[in-house]
Length: 304
Picture 1: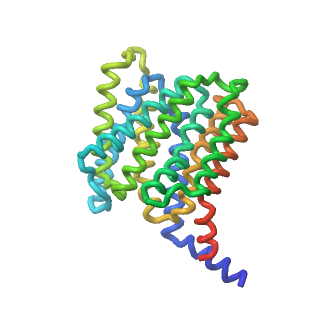
Picture 2: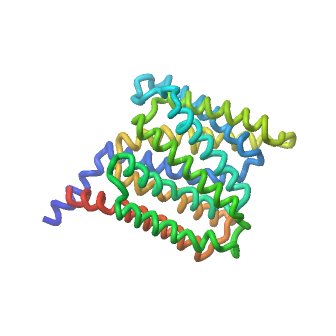
């Protein structure tokens, strides 16, 4: 009996599932590299966003030409698109980069990337499932675990309340963007290209209107901004779409919560953030919150 269960469990990881998991792990690694890359570019937030999104649009367009029959929808330019997709992505970029400018990158990244817990809450609500106890409990564990980190400025870079509020605003923006993608069932490469181009143009206009010019920008600054568009946004979005189509959704959902943990760990290893027990508690709380929200799915997977 035990051997049959083991064989059944291993059977989940067929070639398709394995490739989906690899794509998911690759996406998580790219997303976790974002705070490091942003710290290497001395450019205003909206200029970084503009360069990144224009590069991501070009990459998505190229990918669409290489695979013209790739599934996915093209966005319909209604108010949902402009508010949730374009506005959500602009807000996610602006507020996250603003948070990184005013706070310790490990701290604000952990706060920002609690957004998957909020997404689960909103998705359940919109699906008519109400507020599930395990979802509320998971969110509570994550946020309670973050409190010592938020309230302590004894280690790492000084982090203001503006940075934490901007991090939360970035998380809310990611929730809006993710809900749009959920409602549309995912975008095609051409759809992503259109979305990224709209975001790139708008963020460039915002930069020209409200941000200071950057006469001292170096080639490295421009190259890093382009890398953000190619990696954490361009390739990562398309790899995540592949992972969702081919990988086991339960494990992929939990992998999303690893983004802030990996990002925070990477920043500590680079010496850009200081290790502390508050940071360790926050990492553990985010993971525990994720596992609590996914507990029933793990049970179903075990019984399958």
